[in-house]
Length: 151
Ligand SMILES: Cc1cc2nc3c(=O)[nH]c(=O)nc-3n(C[C@H](O)[C@H](O)[C@H](O)COP(=O)(O)O)c2cc1C
Image (cartoon, rainbow, N blue to C red; front, side, top):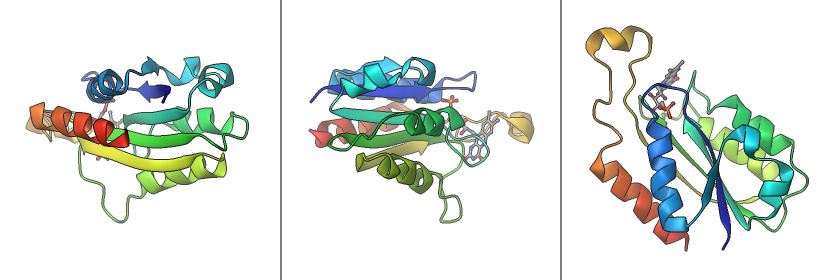
């Protein structure tokens, strides 16, 4: 299945970029930025993964903008992936929100992958960051397992 990954990392740690690289290796997928994810590029794929870090309880807003700029994507699969300083709680429904945008555009959402990513933003910097060392080898292995299970 031809797969393209649309991803952005805004923090200096490039945490999500590392997850995208692991997913891309397993899925033999091209990795592009939201700016390069034009309809032409994505229409050539059978499956598209969208992922970024979490910023202010939301994935990078450029992902949703990119998805909304596409034509009807019915017949194609999509998944989300991301890294965040803190685990997603029931009150921080950013994964569900992005999935809704995908479904609205006609995609069939087939999964999501999330793990912790070193967060040195704002006051956390004073503590040396939270989720130190993440993504770690276990996170990368989990991302690879997720990708392999997609088939
Ligand atoms: C401006 C900013 C806002 C953030 N907001 C959140 C947040 O709301 N919830 C959270 O869990 N982590 C938050 N983080 C931490 C990032 O999600 C985490 O470090 C992530 O791994 C960054 O991914 P990246 O390196 O791919 O950009 C924030 C980080 C930054 C820089």
